[in-house]
Length: 411
Picture 1 (cartoon, rainbow, N blue to C red):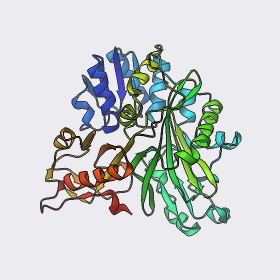
Picture 2 (cartoon, rainbow, N blue to C red):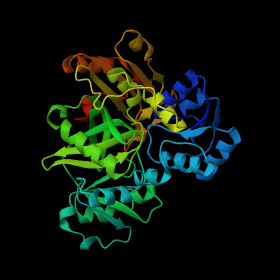
Picture 3 (cartoon, rainbow, N blue to C red):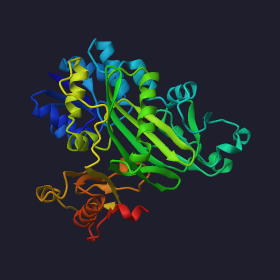
């Protein structure tokens, strides 16, 4: 079969490799000429994953059977829309894909169906901010259709909003942005699969973030299973099942972000995709569910062969996906993850940058310099492994300084 994969970055790499391993022809499209997935694909094209006309043209050129992506939000819509234009199968209709990639539509459906979410409002660039309800502050502003924490900012008060309101508009072509009441919380994510409208829960993990004010919510790790699992998993799953029903999701991947704080569980946002924290890798280790195979079969309209339990979470597995950052500087040396993999210290690991690249100030997820995944029988052993890996990985500048920021240094 011939697959067009939208995006060829680190979040799509495992899917690309999986397709190649299973003897499929892979075409990738990415506006970044150095995207790592282009090294493995059979063909690559310099087309943005947001360019619908270009995607359709490339799909026709290569006579693909379907168009897919993983680990990224907005291309889900463009893949589904292009498939509809071309008469190709896909796991999701473009109408649904739009609902789960446009925060305006998503939030309004939450409100209409009593799905718990924080207080919010849509505001224009020329908004009379002095007329806004004081209860929105402190708050968070974000674009309606961006991703990777781009343009997401913490706002202290109305004066702060006046000074920063133009920033999120740099990451969207829409005429409004989202203003939310700030909610002090722990973040969790639910990853799952929908089979004939039934929700199958594969992971409930802690999404650990840090704030580099005014930039907030920058994810540095996912820890499985969540520390909130025992107390809240029934409510988390019930909310997720309601979301699936309300949005009329019939099949395919789901990735729901929720906030747990003093006022209970709030739904932050939802997506119909495999998550961007290498869920396809760690879930395969945790529950033996092959998410890439599920995605391929649903995208082609084939019958699923895997049998998935309604709740496939293993409480005996402890896994941490470390999504690490680095201080600013030019890279003169990178250590290797191969020895760490061979010694079973990590399940996998990879840098996102190369020697000669320059690391910029951390403002969102695009500055992430790499990831690694560790597994252990207990949380104590898990974090011993994490600490050991951070001692061994190196990104050196020309002066020999290690630019890697260990996760502990974010707090």
